[in-house]
Image 1 (cartoon, rainbow, N blue to C red):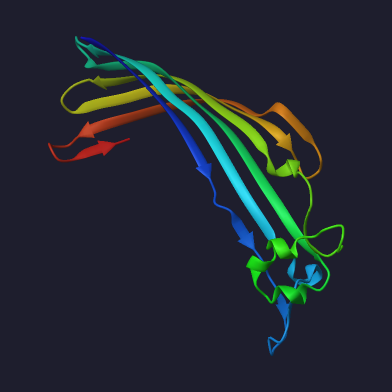
Image 2: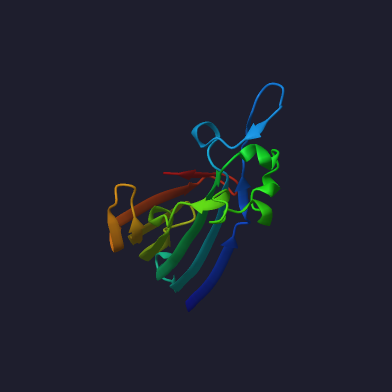
Length: 212
């Protein structure tokens, strides 16, 4: 008797992190003033993060019952899985020109329309920084595998399972490192491995087996 089984399982995921906000005011023991001090507390920040991922997992397995002097089952098959991931961030810092005491230690006042910088006053909150390439990346990984295995029953006391599996794992990356090295769908990992296995089983009784 022969059986062919196959499965394909695609998936798609999106993660949108909420608007992260961080504002730290410098003050004294009496809490009589609150100021923005980039040198000691960093600037107020707002951060958005987005992750999108496509994935697929699939396999096909052929199995055949063995009959004769040695009974058992022969299996062979292949599997393929892949993931494609895109990660993006938008990170903004907010500086303040003028007397930040006027914000009264309230983070909500930083982007109040009355406290935004204008050319006329040259005072208020404004965005600083630029696009951060090191915080954006695209990556993909694939795994291709094939295997063959046999479950052999020599008699009522002795059985064996022998197999061999091959795997090829590949990772590609697009982005930029902190050292300004640029990657454009570069292959970072390409590993091929063989995994042999051998298991011998000695049946003592219906409840006890010895594995070698």
